[in-house]
Length: 92
Length: 247
Figure 1 (cartoon, each protein chain N blue to C red):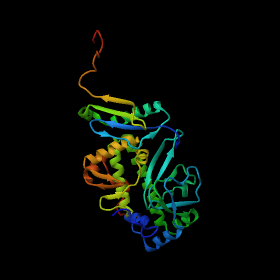
Figure 2: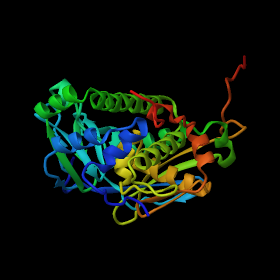
Figure 3: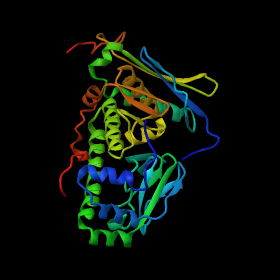
Figure 4: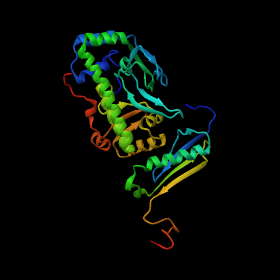
């Protein structure tokens, strides 16, 4: 296992219920934290199914050892399209 | 009261084997005689290394260990959690070379049996030999369930399945109380066992707690609603072969 001087990142999750990560994970850099944040989001959403529409939003927020937010990633469920989205100008 | 100290070095193994078929006093004595003096292995140490060719097999007397394989990027997959009473590398008796490693997850007490003596044991006591054979077959069945869970169960179902399995296995070895047992494993270890991130494991434990199915704190689990837990896990204990039937 990698041990040493690597920065530690904390992956908190939020969908109305907030789960704090107090353990964190040592990762090479912010890019590795981004990769992990997306992987965690995908893993958790994989089996949510239609129940995701109950909470409609899920975020992974990554903080550093000082508690500062480094990156975050959010998935949303809705019955409407994202603002400004159209299937195509001409329609089908 | 959970995880009582085993009455003797083979009592957890004998408890477990006896659930599946009756052991004679001669068989119990023979089993005891093949084992060397118990010794401690600290948490985090390898009990058996991958790719080695052990000349003896190791019985886990107390503690938790894990069969695991490590990938080149350092990612580790645990393919079985072993509990007291498990003959953790009985496979090496016939496989010769270890295709996986076994790691102490907690401080463990183990004892070893030389392969030459195990061969004699199975020749002199064929019924005992079949019971040990059955034990390795059940290991394979545990791996099959692990595979199904990794591929097809939801995260919550997978965690619930692991809790059901460990409870019944610890109970079989006389190491669990009434719906209560100690599981002093970190969320990192549970993540490596479930193939999930520690962050996800942490959420799943919170979810199981939130549904009032288990209380889980300080490495102790109390199952509050077995039927609901088994339902979430779609748990069918057939693969653990916990009923007594002659072999």
